[in-house]
Image 1: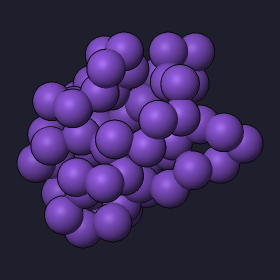
Image 2: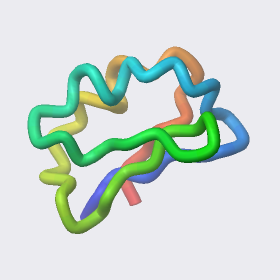
Image 3: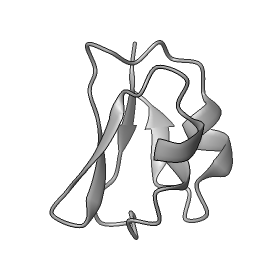
Image 4: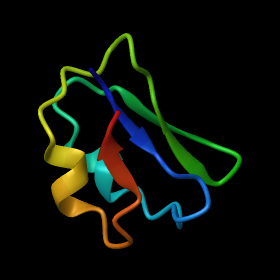
Amino acid sequence: MAHVIDKEKCIGCEACIDVCPVEAIAKEDDKCVIDPEACVDCGACESVCPTEAISAE
């Protein structure tokens, strides 16, 4: 089960990209996107998101 980013809440700050241990997050069209194939569901991104845009799917 991977984490997902709510694009409406994402402000593109890249905090999640900086903490992802497996580099599963990229920026597309000024928003961050998680690759579900690469995500190891560690939750690091969810804990640093300032807008609470990230949740477990």
